[in-house]
Length: 326
Image 1 (cartoon, rainbow, N blue to C red):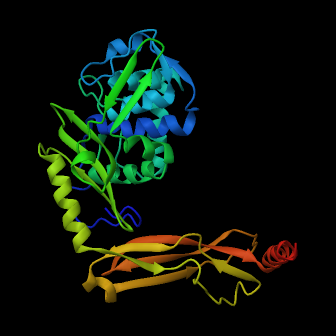
Image 2: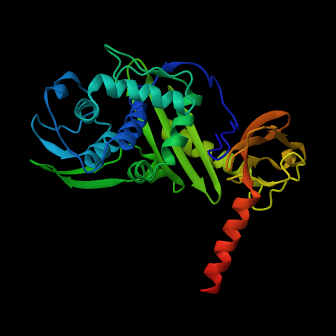
């Protein structure tokens, strides 16, 4: 997936629902980061006895900050860390509800979450390759998540112990363009890897299921698609301009550039369509249309068109001129 436009460059079974094991923890981390201060100190309780497998081995009564727990969650895939976070922040049931709400909010329409860790002996988490790619893109836009998932090594001191943790995502040390990701494995799910990589202006996300050689697979796929595609600016927010008679008393603009990855032979097959909605009660900053981009007839991405009223535009210009005079 092109992480900027969300264009799926290639894939198989992209919408097939499967068990997602510890890749669940990407959503666990995002939910915690968005709802709880990172400096909050959380102490492990009896909830850690409910999980097994991959752990940070925190003891009952041992305390550490949410940030440290998130590192243990993402680097070491700690199932106990997931339980401590879910149980001692929003409350376990409320945390799971919030995870599902977040998934829907960001467009993960085929995802169902029942626990914060991904173990599937009692409760099961399902998603699709496409949904996990959407999740990774969303999570990577969060600076805290991006910082943590890119760490190879982390040292911390809890209320009881000192720890040195190494990232289980071997792609970070095997591939120089890797920027983060999350591993997953249970006997039922098989080997899963969600990863991201950046080369120049190009950002890609890869999701694989049931692949034992996942790290080499991702490295080879990144090299293949970085070479096959290039990043192109299809619409520039600064040069975007529409003269529309209906909104003649305002200025129409978009907030973001539209960049997409294209093969060289696709350049003449890109279409940019502008759709304007005629609204009666207009206010400054309202959405009045969209710019939609297609490649070879396939919808790729869109940006909202906003209205800036001329009075507001003039007041901004006057303020800038006054600042210039000073």
